[in-house]
Amino acid sequence: MALEDVARPSAGARAMVMTVAAVPLLFVIGGLAIRYAAFASVSEETGFAAYARALCRWDCAWYIGISEQGYERFPIPNHSNVGRWSFFPLYPMLVAAIRFVFPYPTILIATVTSIACSYAACLVAWPLLENNMRAYVMYCAFLLSGPFSFHFTTFLSEPLFVLLTSCVFLALKRSSYLAAGVSSALLSATRLVGVFVVFATVIQMFSEHRRQGGSALSFPRWLLGRPDLLVAVLISPAGLFAYILLLYLTVGDGFAFLHVQRAFGRVAGNPLVFLWDGLSAVPTTGWLPTAPQWSALSAIAGLALSAGLAARRQYGAALFCALCIILPLITNLASMVRYVIGLAPLTMLLVVLLSASRLIWLAALVLFLGACYLMTVAWIGGYLALV
Picture 1 (cartoon, rainbow, N blue to C red):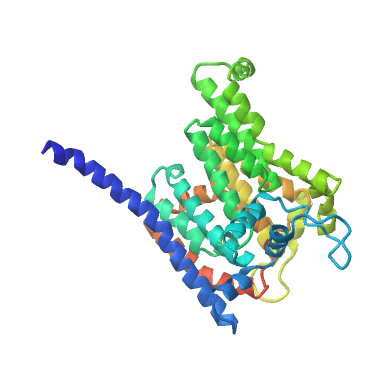
Picture 2: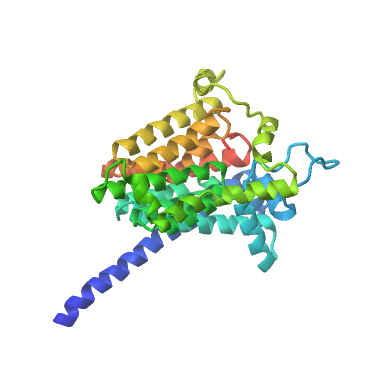
């Protein structure tokens, strides 16, 4: 009996591990089936390679160019006068490294890698969701079979950004500050706003200091007395600094990623004006919101969810997400939907809220799967300018 009693928890734990691993795998398969069906309905081509090419829209082409050719020196005859420098290098470098080992077309490798990153992001989310199975199922469905799952399964930065963001917050949850610092450094090499996650690290350190009975005034002295914490903070922006050095050596301008924004129509302005202009862009025909309205509503929803994180005392995640929305909002609303759905803490909070009621949870799952088909058709057809 004693041996049986010991074995039962172990068997239960193994079953739970298998379940946690199987749930996102089922949505990987289901999402592929739904998106491929959408592709087949609008394309005369067949095969996975044609499917991968069809989903590669908008910024995907820039990432392919970086992965295959690197960052160009300006100017290049017969090429676009808009450089690739605004797109950060980590994900294209990862795809290039995998392509070196497996010599297949870039978009095929990137598609498989993105699916793998999104699958891994789901696994990392399990402890962050406090082992809430309903929320976990919905989170996996959103990333892998949801209405915006094409963002997480093609050559865009979202899959790696979500994975690394989740790794940072899981490391902070476990007070593994060096692991959080390394993940933060990689995050800052994936997208510019990734550098803001260092604030979440500092806030977590401050919270730990306060739990130990320290005062706010003594925090700097306490931090200086912890070399491991200092290293975690200092290495967090290392990815950004490495990219600045790369651009300086390649282009002669370490801040080319900022200076090229004007070529993409991004000029600093009043974010409230951008929001108002987006909300005011009413449709001329039909009742569906226009792309600017979707972008404005996404920004507002993202900021509201950030406030929700703060209300739950997740101050680091709240500040990180708010900054990731406000910084691009200062220039315009372009890509706002993509930026908001790529913020893992916001998505996790949303699925937790939706999972509180079983009926709402089921309805949301059905909506996710149904919208996946329709949105993929719109994405392939070029009707969505949401990135």
